[in-house]
Image 1: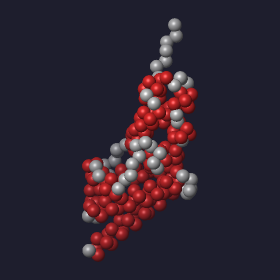
Image 2: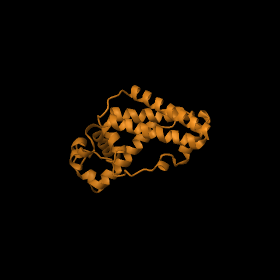
Image 3: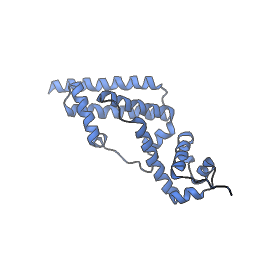
Image 4: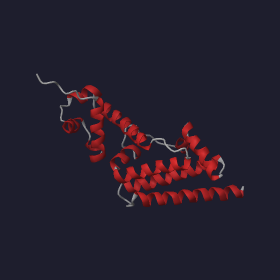
Length: 194
């Protein structure tokens, strides 16, 4: 008697993420996912109950996938911040469907952000403190530089991911570095005026 192949939750999420990256979020549904895996819809329904359950699980899986790729790494805060920017731009360039899903409101986990959300957790405050140290700026000025760089980077990455602007990852990073340096210079000038 032939042994049944077990379709795990991770197998389903891996296939759904592949489809999302390749085809876009709108193409991922229980039937197309079952065809991608080569199984019936039953294992998907069993693991996730319905499409809403699958969407939420896929959103968290994609978010975790993105965070894992960025990783931690360098102790140098500027290098770590730059690495995060490079990965963000690389995703917008090479995986625009994933970028749109995670950062342009397609995910069921999407929400509206405020300026304080950009640097609210302890790890991000640590980055701001290290950047303040390395640039010689007061912490509030360093936070403003980081927020402005994140907003500029997001705008540029959005333009790349939606096809409105064409730039290589190297050119995009050059633009982001130049903007970030301008933000630091502006904060230094403002700090001296006080």
